[in-house]
Length: 319
Image (cartoon, rainbow, N blue to C red; front, side, top):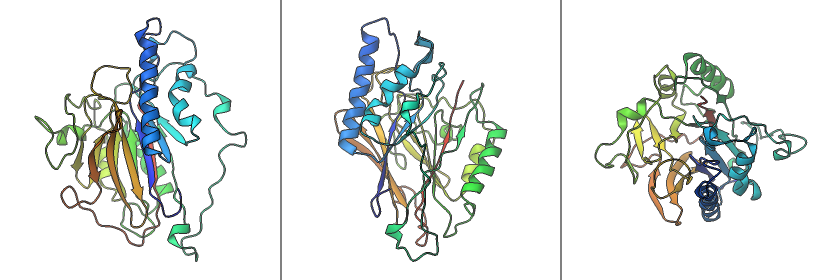
């Protein structure tokens, strides 16, 4: 993160590369998806990109190794030198080998930050991006064991997060298929406050069961929002308990639905911590702005003494 500057993340959801490769329209969908990503990256210049699942449509890919289509999907981000990460969706289960050239030879360099009680100013401190990945199996759930792993790992990485303390870190959560909590807040007949969004054309189609992960997250004051993909006709954010539940925007031309494509953008401000999120469309239009802590949506206390750190957990759904 640039010292003193907001940190911006672009979410690319449900690209579905590799569909109908033997037809003319299949490869054209991938070309159009790439165009959408290029537009978003040029308009927003994010610091980080998250591929939010269903990057490829594995059941349509006739080759032994799907990395060819992954390489196409990440090329707009990689060519700009933007760091990225991916969670996996229910269509990402093709055989895959991570090409070595995607990674620098020495690996990921260690991150060195000034100590909490150092004489460095807030703007000289740096922010962490920590990735915890949980793979799941059928049915479409995050299991008890995974919730327990998440609890243990998050407490290891982010101690004191169960309390509002100066050295706790705010957390943003990312996975692919929405939890059942999304059903509880889903707007009916359009989108009405306190929810924010532009399309509400489908049911949530949540995970098959709720096995503890949401109870865990709700009890952690450090958790501020959850972001999911999976449903192409939904892009709303709604408050739930003390956090936001948000859908991304269908980015790819692959997959079902003909709604205009776009990407959800998240911008994190350091001191004090806050975030806002909006949708950037393929025609460069911006809409559906949500501000963390805004009085007309959902208010939060700010932590004036908080070390400005972002903790991102990635929970993947693989079937």
